[in-house]
Image (cartoon, rainbow, N blue to C red; front, side, top):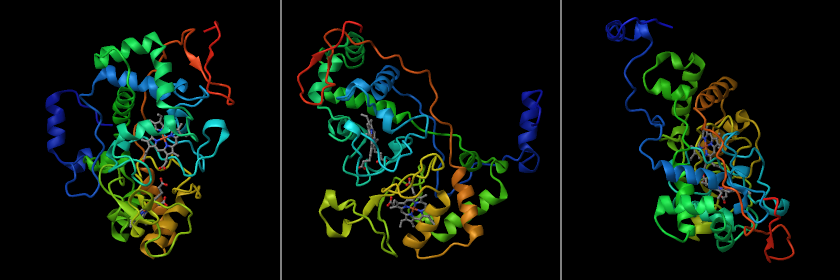
Length: 344
Ligand code: HEC
Ligand code: HEC
């Protein structure tokens, strides 16, 4: 590290150029842009959304929260082939990360939700995920005074609505970005942030054509493409066809972000691939119709690992306590509320 004893000296060092400091101008014209740290957000709303994201009481079992399948300790996903939801049911598709999801052109593999707010209503009422209904989730929230007062502070209304619940969760998710990865440091001008191998990997990533689909700040998330353009990829998933009913959209998926990809295994919508090396080879073969050499593959994998940024870090939210009138629905047989025990 260079030691600078005065502002003047720092300016002198910087003006001496990259050879001495290893730091040059931010790179222009690259197809990937750095992730920006969140600014100017509504603090109280984000704090409320954070609580809801971690609150298992929004599920029928009171055991499953958004964080169960989008674990912020493991890259915003669950490292499962497909997620385990209500009553141990296995979902049909791999859980994508919520990190940097705000950059997605639309949400879900098939893009059926237009934004984070629309998406957030889905899992609560999905029988295979949180297994609840919006009405019952609201009943739970309404029965918790700590939530009531937070909602009325943020939204200024008496009754809590599902619109407010999803709005607050989306506001929290907007802050779940991962700036400052080694690759971003390089993009911002730090020549020493990447090794020669990683840089070669980035050049290969561009030269081989990966960047045609994986670009922008999230290195993906910005377009829909067929999985298996050159060589068919066997899958039962319909892809975007389920939304558009256009036969050309069969097996078309939202191009996933490659940010933090080292953390979010297993890969692909079917969660079938556990190693990044193999995922890269499959992409080259099925999307580009090429075979990468071992060296090319190694370098691209090394580059992909430089996309891991600062993970969300904050104090664990303290959830407002339930009351005696908070319903619980632990008995699968009926939806009749059983009052919670006085031990609450
Ligand atoms: C039981 C596991 C499970 C739970 C609980 C769950 N999710 Fe998901 N989530 C998934 C799966 C699986 C998908 C992909 C589904 C698809 O694309 O069809 C997904 C997709 C998403 C996406 C879209 C990401 C993208 O790249 O398209 C977001 C955002 C998201 N979930 C947020 C949430 C929020 C917020 C909650 C809580 C209200 C939540 N999830 C609860 C499993 C879960
Ligand atoms: C024509 C567009 C396109 C090209 C070119 C392309 N990809 Fe992809 N990539 C996709 C799509 C679509 C998916 C999702 C496929 C699926 O899940 O079935 C994907 C998925 C991935 C995944 C797994 C992501 C995850 O979270 O599961 C990795 C890793 C990846 N691509 C890397 C690459 C690399 C490296 C290259 C170049 C060798 C490349 N891609 C070229 C469209 C493309």
